[in-house]
Image 1: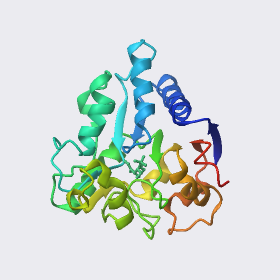
Image 2: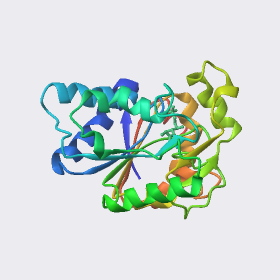
Image 3: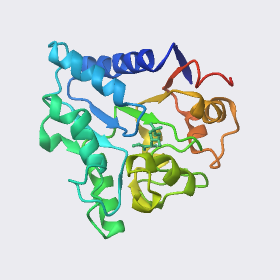
Length: 242
Ligand code: F6R
């Protein structure tokens, strides 16, 4: 795994955005795998800024997001659909039909997941997958203990993830959905390139386990040690235990 050191969140965001924009420039019709959460917000803002300057063109880009809460309507302010539109899609010239997330409104989990797998296969797989890291080492919503060989599937969120995400739901964990549809580790590992972003002391243990711990389902991100083209961009705090 290649590690790129960033001074702070701003620097991490800019470096990550540079890698994403290089992908879009080198292959304008690329498939970007995207992540939600707090970590990539700065990188998305940077991409929007470069788009506004005329340096980036998303007109041929296709996106597939990692995950979506099960049961939240798209229009819910905390759905990942809303997140992606608010932070990126509404501000660049990506075609509405070229953005894809699992359908959290489909109550039939098997059907929702099979349809999402079909979409990922039909666009030809992922050129660059962006990932944040859960404090417990999760990637997407693949929580500790998940099998490495899964594609999109329905998961129960762990207490740790519900706790970490309640800040987006008025601090009330009762309001956090308890399940999600997530791309599986198999799909993530099939991406041609992977870019992981991490910042802050709260991620230091997870970064250490992902980079130098044993490869084990107990730390889902540790599988990335086996990916042939994985880059971690992290700030000093997140790298402080290495
Ligand atoms: C988001 C996702 C999650 C987050 C992770 C880190 O689509 O799949 O794995 O990347 O929970 O979240 P933040 O960035 O909020 O710390």
